[in-house]
Length: 301
Image (cartoon, rainbow, N blue to C red; front, side, top):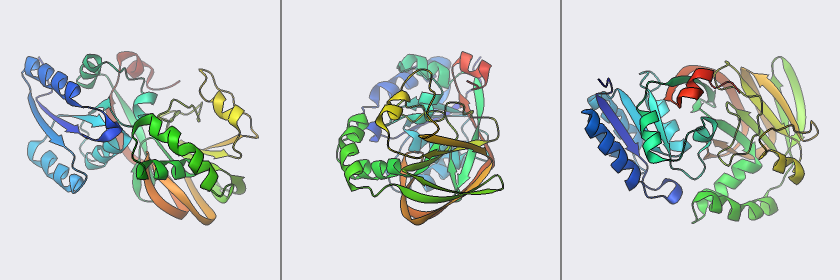
């Protein structure tokens, strides 16, 4: 007998430029077969956080399913951070980084069964400038690309590809960073500095080969140069990157300062230009439904 009596389905209708109807229909059919209750909320882009707080408070869901990208997942994780309600994910954004790292399938029926299952992992979260991060935050070139993508008209991975060349032309890299990490102060010139609680970007690019979601640490990734051969290596199954290209520090806290304002993003959402970033492991852990094999290995590579 199912224990998931009250299922809240949160749908971002515009994420990724994809039609969400097939997913909604599959979830509705499965919930009906299980004899459970379903409430659907579609995000509007305005007052969603306040509205969803009220929905969660009134409806008291026992499972929350999310149809959208990393930004929508992050929104719900912030709302549910004190409630321990498990999440189920349907990757439907432009770049689905969290789903990529969880090895989620693309078939709607399989995703529904996983999202409603009792196979879970608990993920670490990072507080970055007092905002929750589940996946990857960065300052520099990638954040500039995300800014240009969000200002463009074409969604999906094609939109990122189209914006990549203008971003490279316009960006004034390298940037000079001061990094305070694990009792050391370092100075580095870099094109991109990432704070990663995951191994991969949503594109499938492995930037943090040894990263673990649940070890109580994150990685500070310093990309020293724009090196196309090294970038192409990140799309291989097994990745070994040159130390002249990437420097990695494991940490539970880091303070990053730049001599000038640099583009900044959290979980694929552009957050403007900053001169300082403070990141620390958060006490909040997020419970997410995953495939059985992923639950068994507890996300350790």
